[in-house]
Amino acid sequence: MRFLVDTNLPRALCAWLRARGHECTHVLDCGLAQSADTPIWRRAAIEGEVIVSKDEDFADRARQTAAGPAVLWLRTGNGTSRKLFAGLDPIWSIVEARLQAGERLVEVR
Figure 1 (cartoon, rainbow, N blue to C red):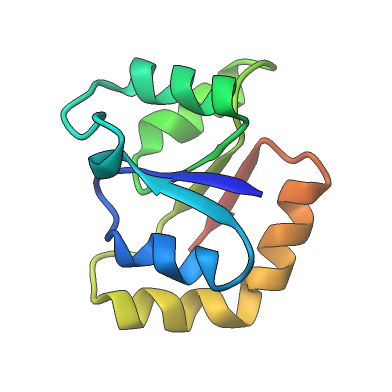
Figure 2: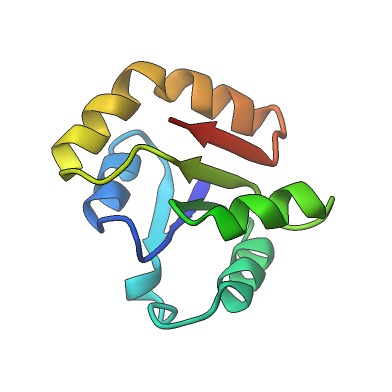
């Protein structure tokens, strides 16, 4: 899978995803760091990327339209990268399976 990580998440998440065999770009690395949601949404749709964000706006878009990219909505609260990865590790296979099955919005709490 291909992922586009939003500015509200650490760049280290890209390395974590790559270590699991995925392609990943952070918005800071593709000129979208200061962008509104629409250019990020558009890029993810064109590139076939899953948007990874803490931003509820992307989740709302995924709910409201049948077209566009999938969204991995991380509602894990603030914390260190280590804490984020520790929370994702035990459920990652489920998250992957849901995205591969075509779910457009996968929420992680």
